[in-house]
Length: 319
Figure: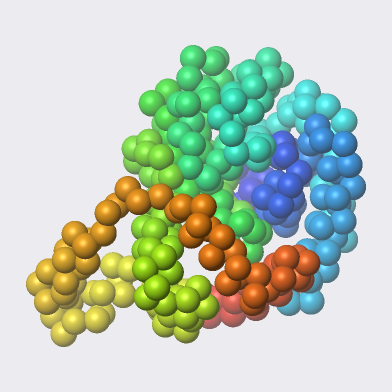
């Protein structure tokens, strides 16, 4: 039987440190699950900006049928004046600070001074192994990576990555907490830069940029290939299940038939080729022709509405 979030945390509050897009999304995840959330950000004006975005997101989620009581969810999110106030007596802290090792190390040193001995700390970092910013601190056994997809309140997967110093009970607690909140926990068994999600995304992006650079296809045609092709299957199946179903005899049959092709494609590329400034200029030009920079926020809101519709459909179908 699945435990409730309150059972996992024994009724304690959780804290979110960093009130940007990811931190605000995490606050919704926890509050939607019935937990009291303390949100903290040292940047001036961050609280007001986060509150405005959270209100907008909760209203849209209610309209999509994803939550019943947006006012009740919002009421469970409180803003703390200091880091110490935010983490006082909490069972769990979700760190969502700026994606830079020195920034995260400084914050972890602060958390080392103010967190209780039992508090577990998850980092939202997209690709920095925890050992690079927590090694040697007293809190290290209670720290792990809990990397979400943005926005975390609409896309459920979260990667759990331990450092060599992370205690097994830290992983177990965080996995139980995330699953009790309706997130999909993926346990990454070894530290590796980029974890699983961004390493997979990175391979696809590397080829996408190279295809543009080589004049093979435009940004829009590459996006069409994923959006109206691969993405249809990948929205409800992973790559291994996809190819398992794409050959009469299953995955080994697929590997025998198409393995040589993929190996030949891989050998045709210089894997270390960086994205040059000239290539960035060309991709930026193509994207801005399709979407002016002043329309980015509007398009993000459209993306979130589509994700809400998908989330509602998946909830109904229990995919």
